[in-house]
Length: 246
Length: 264
Image (cartoon, rainbow over all chains, first blue to last red; front, side, top):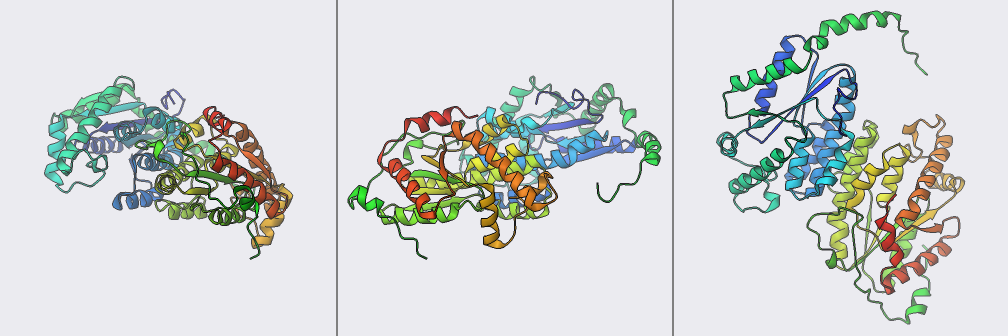
């Protein structure tokens, strides 16, 4: 799909963050979520690869190293579809601001680096609308690598791209893999209107840029919990209780 | 068990074991990364048809006949992958997945088996008998209103089989066979999720008719060989044996080649 949720006339708005592991995007989206919540807005947060149902299969596949580039790609699409159909779309219809830690661009970048044809991957995610805003946290490769490698020295097999046989050394493999993903992200930055944030800056500096950009592009007052209660109260009184059987 | 293999094999081959010739193979579209198609020496034969159409009986008979003729066989089917088959079962029981998710879940299962069962067996020179393939998955999704283009792209990873036998059985006979098997109808095989009718019997008939019409639609572009499944087991199997023989002794038919190239 080539339309955003706003263009599709959804009352809600979807904001996505993308970036390499260690780019600091999860910290930024957490702070963003807190900012919106403290203003008493209707906010929902969703994370890549987090659907309960699909996660069991994905983690089994990862643990036992059962995944090929193709199954890796489709199983993540399954996870995304489950969250998309059961949570994101209904919440966006109900006028929520939905925050996504990674969206379809993660698949576009990663799966293509793993060798899946780009048109095939994009075709699979064709059911999904585009985010209204996509922040791309662009850190120097070295900075991202250091953040990950300092904090969590044990790299996981797929995370390090070991399935690609880039190097027998997990750290070297991770470096090459992340470098290629970064190339993919940068290549689609213009096409998908990424708002590029300099992720080498201090956390506070990045967050203030993010907040300013959102405030200038989205009328946040429309998403307040208070407003929606007021709006819902009137028709709720008129509506009849649901009959047990159509 | 009284399913004797038919003498047709001996008659036509004079006891000599036919060594299948290596033939050109291809995927429906994008295919899978890192696969050398020239290495796939075996044959892929798909049997499609509704529940109760006699697929598994026919595959068992075909296996027996093939083994008798000196061919090694491997059987694959849907929902048998190590990766997601358990999770798929759970999901179906709870009936909690929306259509796109379920569709992708099945595609994961298919891709896993394609890579880990079908391709290795073909590489080893086996005759692979698939109890359903992408066509059932596509037909189910098409009945549920999924975009044909989207499905075509998703399953463009699939290998083009050497033959696709579609067992066509009239819905009335299907119902009877399902009752004879386990005295009940399956929720999904009756398409109960579609809300066609609250009466399960009614829903089964309607759903199977919808499935049949989707199979008709896939028939030409994917080159199905339609087998009249209303006949006796032996008659059906004899026809399948004859067609399989052609697959084994001849080079791949030109029409099968052309068929896959123009998906619906």
